[in-house]
Image (tube, rainbow, N blue to C red; front, side):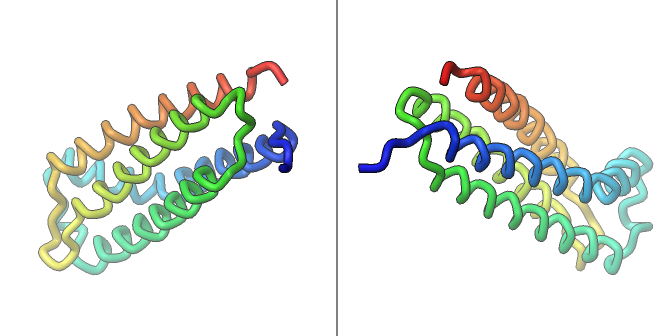
Length: 144
C-alpha cells in the first residue's frame, strides 16, 4: 500500500488554489458588469447577446471549478489531515454550487437577471471561499 504524504498532496492543493484564483480573476470583469447593471436597474440595457456571452463565460468558469472539485475529491490526502480535507472538499463544492447558481440566475433570452438569486449566489460564494481559504491555511500549516 502506498503511503500518502504531503509531497504528493500539496501540489494538488496549490494547483487548485491557483486555478481558482485565475478563473475568478478572469470572470471578475463580467461580474462587475452585471453587478453595476443590477445597481443601476439597467440589466435589460445589456441586451440578450451580451448576457448570453457573460452567461457562457460564467458557465465555462463554473465548469473549470467543477474540474477542480473533482481534482480535490480524487486527491490522496494524508490520514492525519483527512478531516480537514473533507471539510475543504465540502466548502469547495458549496463554492462551485454558488457559482452555478449565479450562472443560472442569468436569463439571456429575456435579458434579465434574477437579482435575489444572483445576490444569494454571491453570498454563498463568499461564505464558501472563506471556508476554503481557512481550510487551505490549516492544511498548509499542519505538521508534516
